[in-house]
Image (cartoon, rainbow, N blue to C red):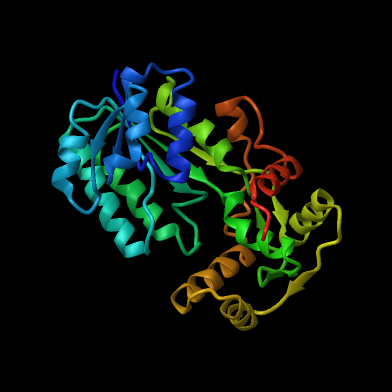
Length: 290
């Protein structure tokens, strides 16, 4: 049985591959990457490295050839770009006659009003349409997404948010990676959907725990969307990112990520890493500001 992970040099993809290599022989594992040179380390360990670019479907035909179980990691970019790229990947998987597709989706993707939901809804529908057995891993928010805000706090800035009391099921990428590896390499996951969320907490609750980890009180600044955009701009973030950052706050405020679930326990035998432990890992992994 041959398994393949796309985007395997990315932050999540590289973690998924590392988890798989603990239980799966390297000879059974392949990766598809845009730049094979970046995966030289994996190749040296016996993983087959294939060149595949979601913008060039002909490369995917070669990349997916002979693959039994495929893991498609959602690409980066705006919704329109991602929908097109994912459609290319799904079509290539169908042409290659893969026997199983796992995909990193978003919590409650089919019904969500989250700004990123259109990509995942369209991709899930495309996969279902192929008739290939699937598993959708509907991931909540990565705690690593908050690293810029945590770095700001370490530099003395307040935690700024316009998300009000919206709740998020933050979890570490490592937790999501372990769940992904369990689905790709395990049995009995055909035509399943897993809602993967950590404990639901508000920004206020997250910041309180962060203060405990840092041993200091962290001020939190609640603002409206317009003020949030201005503060982000003043912090040096480029103008083109500001609407997306505001929409993320809006999506959190509207509780599009407030999806509770015990599906982590089903897949990895434990809940997501507790938020205090997870924040401690994040803080310890941030290089000191010089």
